[in-house]
Image (cartoon, rainbow, N blue to C red; front, side):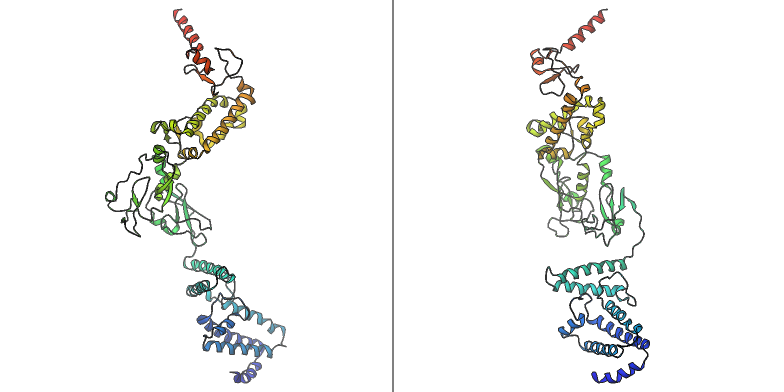
Length: 485
């Protein structure tokens, strides 16, 4: 091997420096490229000596290793022969090293194209590099810096491969499909899953959409396969719950097919496992039923059971959209809850008091400026009626949160009417039976209100007087006297 050096050196020295530089660079790159395609791992860029040192330790690189050794010796002779040449020829050596390093895949930036080297821009090269990177990740110790670097490189290469396979195209930001209003998302996280293909959405690699109505997430490539209409339409036209507890019909009634996508399902299947939705009572395939759990309204109203039960994906989106809608009339469905559930009885009394405070707050300019009624902005039905509840109200009532928040709101409203505002305080009543100077209000706990004229009395005075309203007697006698005239 070394015997050829004395012959090669005079021939090389006889050439002018620029021409010699081109000859050496061409031979060097050709042999390195041949060696790299067969033996090198482009991600093993740590340690001194580079990849040549590791391949020599492996002991299985074959004849190509000797060729690279000869080539490195030739480069050493070349560098020694022209160590004193002009600065122009010397400055080309770093460029040669950087080009060769980029050609070997040692550069950290796999998105930039190195000058004179485009090997990693091909799909085949990237796939080979990805496989080599996987091997490095598996062979390196856990929690080691080498594994972290290889994992980072693997992600970068996969992103580059995805860009080459699926070049980015201009897609509309909004698409309308089966009443879905899909809006293109810009998120780069992986916290979401495609509701159609049941796989993760890699925001860095895939373009994806979300329905603004039902929050249906979907890859852009899966949009054409959507067969389920938007649940928002059902919520708008049929805003009521199924009040039967798990109305199961059986697989035979479904012809042993999924209730949504009509795929064949069986009870003992693995991929085609039949999964029961506790809300609808129907069976679904694993693609339409992800074993999500939510409290069921029918169980909450009939059994006061707030435990979550497994539901299908379409029922999950429906229940989530309906959760804050006040569509449950507890008095009509199960009025015994107010007797047996202490929290609901307290909530009913607080809501009744708030409705009695509403006329004072609506006609008070100070209360309107302070926007006191906006404290119940998320529960406007609390200032409209007493019997309508949402599923969220029932859940918070069972958890003890709703009683606490309504008590604070009730106390703040009463404080404004009875203490802070003189106009509201002047609208109080004086008991016509005992003529006590204390101002009474309809929402006081010790007050009673006449159902006919809304006059307020002390509760004890009113019932001691046989629940007879003096104001109603005066109005009745006055009406009779007018009729006689």
